[in-house]
Length: 228
Ligand code: ADP
Ligand code: ADP
Image 1: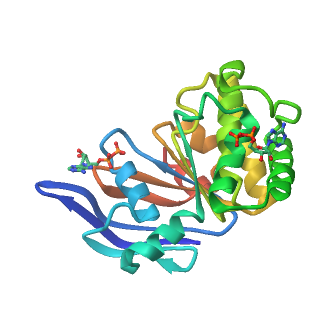
Image 2: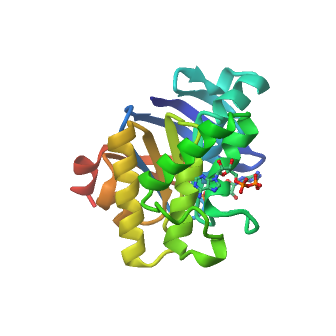
């Protein structure tokens, strides 16, 4: 589903990524782990097409992002759902209306939006809470709304950038399990960016350890955790 071959990114004197190779299979959860400055955000940018690699190839969902024109990269971004550490919901809109937003932008018919929002509220365990405003929801519930919003347009790939860094341990576990469910039930390929190895141990199928822009290790979780 996702392939990086010899990807490099240079910003003036800084080598943010250096000869990065990695592979993520469809319908699995891949963790990208590394300390601050390791190149995680740059790597995410390469996947979404917002960052142009200096060298190498990036292929996501059969689209060669690194060679695509602006229009094709924009189209690809619509096929990647994004989940962030800070959920950034519209405070003046209900949970349901936040989830509906990407569908409204797409111009989906109202009846379809209503059905899809109901379905998404159930998937993320918020049935009956659609009319709540973000201020009435806990941090974990807001993240659930964020995940539902990211899934609204049925993207094949979900990119979760530090999705649990702002949450306590119990809420973190619940959100990670939700991501696992989403992956298994919907067949979505999930990439989680994190600085916490515990997150990776909990749910990832495979993992890439980044250090100073280089891949320290990449492969199946059990092969890598054994070395840690
Ligand atoms: P991480 O997300 O793991 O913290 P980043 O991808 O943000 O790492 O950064 C990797 C390196 O690239 C850092 O040294 C950072 O300062 C540098 N970098 C990232 N983006 C830019 C940019 N737009 N211009 C210059 N340097 C950058
Ligand atoms: P806005 O006026 O900002 O567009 P709305 O309150 O009309 O926000 O809601 C936007 C969309 O969210 C609606 O089209 C509706 O389909 C959906 N929606 C709103 N409330 C619910 C709910 N409780 N359950 C399911 N869908 C809802």
